[in-house]
Image (cartoon, rainbow over all chains, first blue to last red; front, side, top):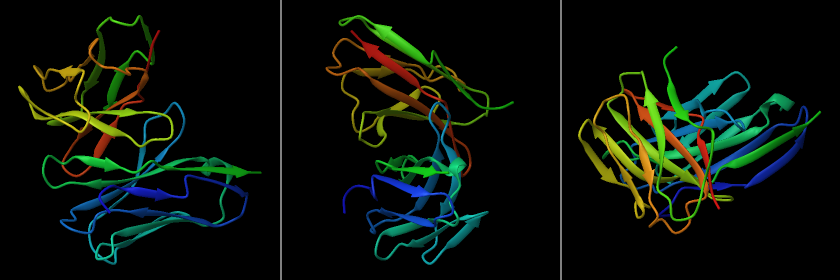
Length: 112
Length: 110
């Protein structure tokens, strides 16, 4: 995988549903993976920075896992709420220049 | 409050005109970045600067220019050579281990 890929592109769930998204990235020369939550007309909000294979991080109802050997990360939202509606971005951070290479995002819509 | 300010939020220009997008930060971050987003695509890197008076091309630098004369400021000029300038532009800066983002400028060229 040369680029960062996210799936699905969009997701529509009911309030209370749990959901998960996938981020795939190049496994060679891994440095760090970032997850962001981005609401329309606002700045992206940092969720997690993950660096170690097997990392699991949690922030309230949101958690993420990391597998650097196979090049993927999962983001989980437990009991989705309407306020979780946003685009979720993952980005692979390169060591040189600290550049973030973004996936295309997963747009989540949670209906009450 | 510390943060990144991009102005304006919406910008309209006529085809063939150069336009400069502003990005200012008061976070004392050394590195700054410009990204572009088109519908259905991820954010793509245009230019970045790791330190004052130095910058590098990103993946889609053609038709753009930047300057980094001050640590706080990293303006992006969209020149008439950019074939499809209509897009959403996002500025970012990097501290020790975290990134901060502006709220973006939507440029429409008519």
